[in-house]
Image 1 (cartoon, rainbow, N blue to C red):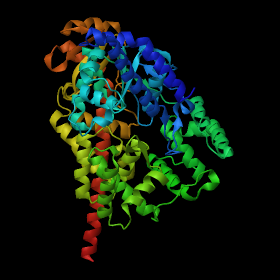
Image 2: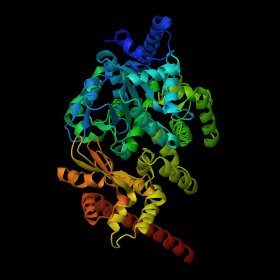
Image 3: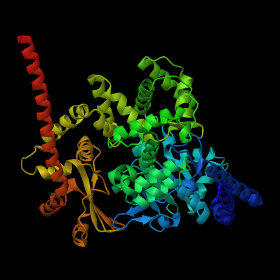
Image 4: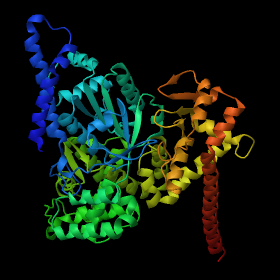
Amino acid sequence: MDEQDIIKFSTELINRNIEKIYNSVKGYGVDKIKQNKAKTGKAFKNYLESAIKKYSKVKTIIFGETPIFLYSTYTELDLRIFGDKNTTVNNISDLLAIDNNIIISGIAGGGKSTLLKYLFLNCIEKENYIPIFIELRDINNTNLSLIDFIYTSIEKLNFTLEKEYFEDTLENGNLIFFFDALDEVSYEIRDRIQKDIIDLSSKYNKNYYLVTSRPNENFIGWNTFSEIEVQNLTKEKSKNLIQKIDYFPIEIKNKFLEELDSNLYDEYKSFASNPLLLTIMFLSFSFNGNISRKINGFYEDAFEALYRRHDASKLGFKRKKYLDLDIRDFKDILSCFSLLSYFDGCYEYSSSQLIEYIDKSKKITEKEFNSDEFFLEMYKSINILIKDGLRYVFSHRTFQEYFCAVYISKLSMNIKSGIITKIFNEKPLDKVLDFLFEIDRQSLEEIIIIPYFEEIKMQLNYNEDDWEWRYITFLYKEIIISNKHEEKVSFLNYSNNAYNLMNLVIRLYFQSEWRYGSSKYEQSTNEIFATYASFSREEYRGRVNIKLDEYSDKHLKRDIIQLSEIKIKEFIKANEIINNLKIKYSNQEKTLTDILLSNSLD
């Protein structure tokens, strides 16, 4: 199977479906039916051919700008529908049998985008629906509606049918939309885009809609979508992924596979079970022979391995060096570049934007170098950037987030405070704060965790009567009771600082993701659904929604507090942690004061 085979399948797909597509298009005169039918078919054929050429190849962190045919590197992932066992996805039909509307959620580096591209190609090969692939990050810095953005996106890939006729084709239910990376839509417009996707799926409900994103508990409120979670790689799947890397010399790969099987997977499971981190792990092992146990050291080792590849011909690499900069200076400039672009919500760059950010970084860091050469070093030599169409992106978004945290950690406390606060308020689910926790833990605790937690306690009147109910209603606006795929109780949160802080505290200190899926704290019982269905104004597709601020029923409050027992215990535990932090930093200040006083007395 290669690219040309898939293009051939796409031609057959359009030929089989041209009558369905054309029958939905309005406004053609009888005398032009044949001509316009051919025009419609050609538009979709041209789009699919261009899309196949774009999405059938991927670029990896190991080989940078060398595109690899996706099928040759793809490792099948396990997905989990809540309440079901893990299911390996072999083809698109496995998902279409579940629901028309699906959210595929997974942590950074888990393989969501690669999976979506695989499903897009598999749809052409196996299904009778026409796939449309949309990269949602491209909507940033535009004022387009979702439907206008969709049309603009496919038009760039040689779709030539007029927009009004394209909209006609939506009505017939012959399309599958693949929306990639909702989490990369900028904070300012994300709510609007989420609503547009939901509205589009409701208005044209005969089509299929797949959306990928990092986890977000707000997906509970997408009533018409089923959420499916990408699972970690098993040991066998991790070994399979490495085996598919065409890497020389072969003895290094074999040594890594041997150690992965005997001990590395079990010792470094949080890394080895994630496709991106496993690849970085392999790269670091190849160059350094060891693997850091901390995530910041892990990324640092990966960066050093990428940077040192200039003279690593003995490992099968040979990269031209464009710039004579010490690795520390290069890292400082790259970190500044990452912070500036991340702060602007810029995750992809035109050539001119790259040079603009590099020039700004040059001025801020006060380093002397050629900006064009620095760009070539990032792109051609180190491969920390890769080219995607006409634009450039980080080889993975987590690199931008890591280097962003690195630069923040070096700033003065005053500047650092404003930047960290803005990130917490606007992008609390991004990994920058997680990286910062390991790189500059005290700053994060003193700027965000301690003061925000104390503010929450004050607003709750913590430890006074009924504080548990106030806590639940402070964080959550409604409870959702469902028996669609399983009987469960879930909570739809407010997007406020209280929720964001507890999310952060739990994932940093309790080492777990506080989200729908891994810690939604369900109670599986048909009785709850039957009892509280009467509280809901409507029952939709096997689920009822109870708005917490509309009910004061004591039995309802009792049951919800009981269901929230783990959440409440976590808050109590978090309070203990924060109190210990306050004591710790108070003692540090006291010690410093004593030292200064002692010095002045002398």
